[in-house]
Length: 356
Ligand SMILES: *[C@@H]1O[C@H](CO)[C@@H](O)[C@H](O)[C@H]1NC(C)=O
Ligand SMILES: *[C@@H]1O[C@H](CO)[C@@H](O)[C@H](O)[C@H]1NC(C)=O
Ligand SMILES: *[C@@H]1O[C@H](CO)[C@@H](O)[C@H](O)[C@H]1NC(C)=O
Ligand SMILES: *[C@@H]1O[C@H](CO)[C@@H](O)[C@H](O)[C@H]1NC(C)=O
Ligand SMILES: *[C@@H]1O[C@H](CO)[C@@H](O)[C@H](O)[C@H]1NC(C)=O
Ligand SMILES: *[C@@H]1O[C@H](CO)[C@@H](O)[C@H](O)[C@H]1NC(C)=O
Ligand SMILES: *[C@@H]1O[C@H](CO)[C@@H](O)[C@H](O)[C@H]1NC(C)=O
Ligand SMILES: *[C@@H]1O[C@H](CO)[C@@H](O)[C@H](O)[C@H]1NC(C)=O
Image (tube, rainbow, N blue to C red):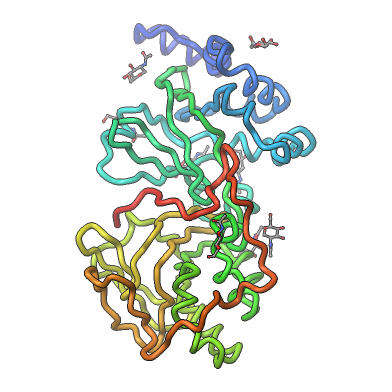
């Protein structure tokens, strides 16, 4: 039997062997709610018991008792949802905290979540880790929802367990991800140009999402744009077939977009830029890729726009455009409630892990 075999190996190497089940039970004072969820998921639990080289991110009782009611209801009534949610808390690989704290840049770690509703990306949906200035490990999940490792390195025969202070939030599609961060103009523009549904259901995307102020700044021009013009501009904000987390592009690199023209990535004084637009929040995970929030609408007719790190307000890439008052495209788009949930994304833009 697999477990017995592992136990013998561990004994032979002088390490006391504890299975995943033993270790979770040993921490039951902190993990009883999670243990209860796992009991409802015997198939998943058995497969985890037989999988070597994993890291379990175990939400504490405190984290799980603060869940929003809609998540609790869904987890209790939809076994596929619960199974997906638990799989998202399992990293592919044994990452001791030293592995996470020694990284110089954010890590984009593959999880066992591979259901295409939440992970239409190659190799399993990611969790992002980076290190706080006090040395704590941050974990970022869907739409930049934060969690922190609160106690760590509970080793078992197949890997290790870290206890975390918030449940991870499974990434959602582009529209839902943008709405969660109040990027209502981007959502409205995508809907008006009939791109929203396509981009919600296409795998492997990188999307640059201008914030509301960026759309507001070119209000004069937007009034005269045809649906085709708008679509052309928005397609310049999408790289297809590649999920470009920040650590994967280099300063000066260019990438072709869905529109056809290329965008250029740059780093200036530690800030990240796409053409002449600054990245305000990098690495917002969505089900089918990643979103980087930027402070300007990119112009496919002006691909040579360059960063201007000293400008007080960003200069639009559309020459002569100006604000006309009001944020375009937001009619009929419902913004998120002002109060964010304990584990969900903040309704305002969170600055997550950065660094190209
Ligand atoms: C964990 O604690 C809960 C509640 O106290 C209890 O019902 C459950 O049987 C315990 N589970 C284990 C694996 O010890
Ligand atoms: C973990 O990643 C490796 C390498 O990418 C892959 O071959 C393996 O199937 C993954 N394991 C699981 C359990 O997803
Ligand atoms: C963790 O760090 C150790 C020691 O540097 C290394 O051997 C191991 O491959 C690392 N694990 C992962 C998953 O990167
Ligand atoms: C998804 O993960 C499950 C459990 O790890 C595995 O059985 C299944 O083969 C995976 N599916 C794909 C498409 O990789
Ligand atoms: C778990 O294993 C890692 C790597 O060998 C080690 O650094 C850590 O101290 C171990 N944890 C405990 C609680 O012994
Ligand atoms: C996007 O996700 C939301 C929330 O899960 C869902 O209601 C909507 O149908 C999805 N959109 C598409 C086009 O799949
Ligand atoms: C995932 O992407 C593929 C290819 O783009 C698409 O056909 C499929 O509908 C997507 N799945 C979901 C759940 O959006
Ligand atoms: C969403 O954005 C709008 C305008 O950009 C702002 O008025 C509103 O306060 C924001 N909502 C939240 C919850 O931050």
